[in-house]
Length: 203
Length: 175
Image 1 (spheres, each protein chain N blue to C red):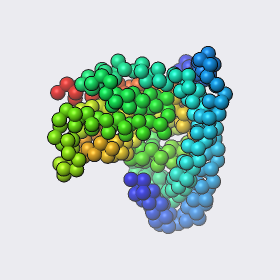
Image 2 (image 1 turned 135 degrees about the horizontal axis):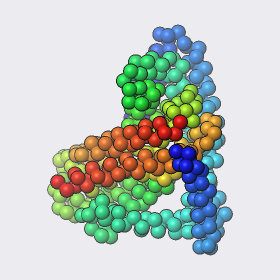
Image 3 (image 1 turned 90 degrees about the vertical axis):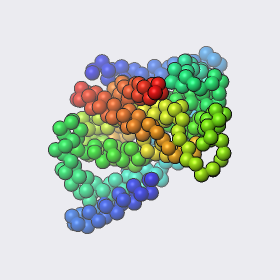
Image 4 (image 1 turned 90 degrees about the horizontal axis):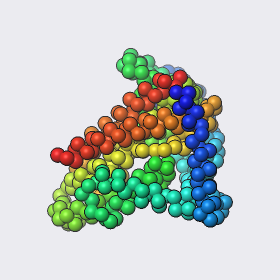
């Protein structure tokens, strides 16, 4: 995906730049962009290291495990047909908590495991599409998978660590001012996701 | 909104206090743990340096070529009617496909309009409330070898739309 986007951006830039006669600006922008990326990473490195350091303490103190356990009622509400104690539940919880805490890098592995476990659940339920590996039949997503992905994409996030770092790098007078509005917005988008999944789940 | 901004300011100190305090009481070696996590954080950033270089170069070239201005002028009548600066349109589209490419555009908004302008605030909130729809769906469904995704896309787009509307409303009250 990114291969196409990146190539298209570069190609358009050079073609359009030559049409508008702004080739020297394009040249400068290419060189400046590379330098800017490095200075941005220096700011980011500080913020991300701080955050990951705190998260390591939280994890050692058992806070993350407790949070993961704490959302079990929510999990049961969203996935009523998921058997209690099924490994999928654990992965889904870990993925949601990683999302909430802004550990974007940690949530993908748990998310992929969750999808595999949900596929396993379909096989346990005797869904023929999931029983044989590569039978040529195309698999339909289970309701649990749809719900999990919609929740994941609506991305409930507590503190947008990266955005704060970017804002401070570009001279914001108050980089953290967006935290509460962002929480309100993310709660709203997640609420819409929850309601939609519940309606679809019922039919 | 002032109150919201003030609340935003106390969340991080409170969060740090809570985590460190909790670790200390639970007799975790807090400082050693912090160093271990921080080291991991640095590795993550080093891993994304090449991505950022590639994207900031591409976005910078696009901006310098005048392409964004042309696109913005073209879309302005439509977008400004709903309170979205035309500058944000490429971001909204790219964000559906790739969050790192979107990051390049976010930084472009910050550089040209400033992070505290309406466009900057809107971008900040927008990027904090939704995920990359198509990327997430393709990676996750691939893991389960699913090809028929049923109502996932509708739900994901609906949530994204809700997040966008909420961001416009909230950012409008912050300036």
